Length: 92
Image 1 (cartoon, rainbow, N blue to C red):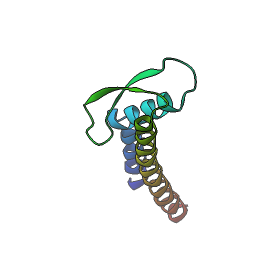
Image 2 (image 1 turned 120 degrees about the vertical axis):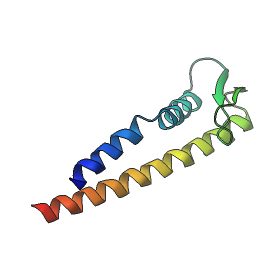
Image 3 (image 1 turned 30 degrees about the vertical axis):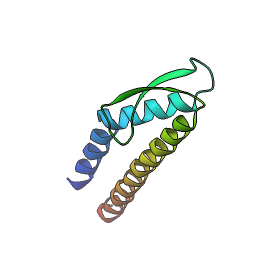
Image 4 (image 1 turned 180 degrees about the vertical axis):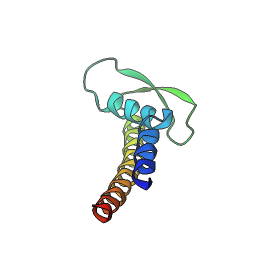
């Protein structure tokens, strides 16, 4: 039962709008090609869209912020995965 709850939690997180947006904006800011000016949300104030130049210091700051947020999600997924593995090991 707990294993299924962990699976549901991981699915819920990976499909959340916030996680999807963070991934999208990280890819957008890392992408070399495309438009020089991109529209992304301020990582500190999600919901506030801004037009920024892709290679500007502000864009680099935003990219670092988004990468930190993605790292937090990676840690969460890792912890949930480890908990799931322990439960599977106990079960079988």
